[in-house]
Length: 228
Image 1 (cartoon, rainbow, N blue to C red):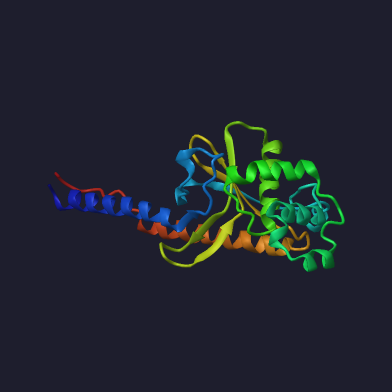
Image 2 (tube, rainbow, N blue to C red; image 1 turned 135 degrees about the horizontal axis):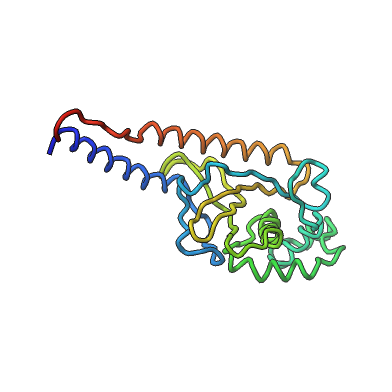
């Protein structure tokens, strides 16, 4: 075997290893049972070259710049979250002081939340998860495509064991290829559109930088003059 052929093999093995290591940059923080099993582990190569970015919030948030708005209002979201957690999660003093049960939670939203939270592996540790769950269901209704899946809670970082840089609230992808063609950020506070865009820009820059690094290490085809 010639030196150049040997070098090609070594470089190919190196690139293959780099692709495996790229998986460590992403981690699914939930075991979402509603998505294909083979798409659970997100890879850098899963992200489309022409990816779309969007933002979502609650009722009347489009006027603040959000791309999508769920018809739920903030008070209803809070009430649903507190009801789902149970009264023991809140002191009576806190509840009474904030008039938390002044409005009855919308039963349809509540039932959807309770039905889907376990399947999506949400523990409702934060109020914002209400919008992430109901927002996912809204996107499914809007897309109405059985070839697509929607999930989220995808954390990203530079490498294994390093700190997370951020987390993706929504990813929209192909069920067969796992290719991700849209990424979204949810904000329960409809005044935080600027912050949502900032987080999406941070991921976009991360994605561009990781692709730049990967392309730098990609081995060019070596043309050997003479016999092998």
